[in-house]
Image (cartoon, rainbow, N blue to C red; front, side, top):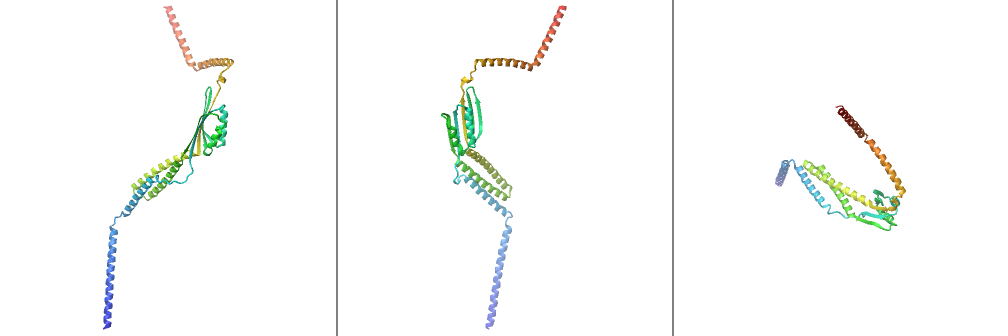
Length: 299
């Protein structure tokens, strides 16, 4: 009797286990089928929509960076950048001797002449010289140039600190280049024509800004590297030296009269066609007049 009861209990347990397994398998199959139906019913452009959202989000992030990077410029230690300009003018007893001294200073301080003009008047000789001097040698050059000058017609030295402008421009270039690189990376991922055109447009604007900033930075660097000195020196010559002695005036007048005669005959050589035409015309007119007179006598 006990053995019968044990057998019946074992069968009942096995039966329950089998039903549980079938129910689990059935529910798992239904879940899998539902998931499959869900995936099957998903639109084919799911990945494109995800990319587009990512693209728009990246554009927004970059635009935010582009707006705020100039306001968030990090201040870092930087070598001071100074633009030095000078304007000096004075009278000298011998303009050419003074110019020789200037040339020696130019050679000694590794400077160079950017522009020069020399004017001669009846009682004055003027020289205007624009000199480019290495920034570190500017003060020494000016001091040595002014040594021994008693009176200046003009002397002014101007120093402009462009350190902040230099750092800001350099930082803007770095930020713009970093932003440009992000757009280039994003361009490689772009799939639609609209996205490509938008990114290329942003890259073009950034490239123009970068080139403009680099040109400005190059100009600043050039002005910082070489200071500019505008030098004006002049010599007042004595009017007595320009007064001529009577003999010299007589000789000059004789030469001037002879030159006038020579020039007259030279002018005639240029006018020979007109002279020939005039002579022929005179001969023809005289001939016609004589014929008329002869006819009148015969009548």
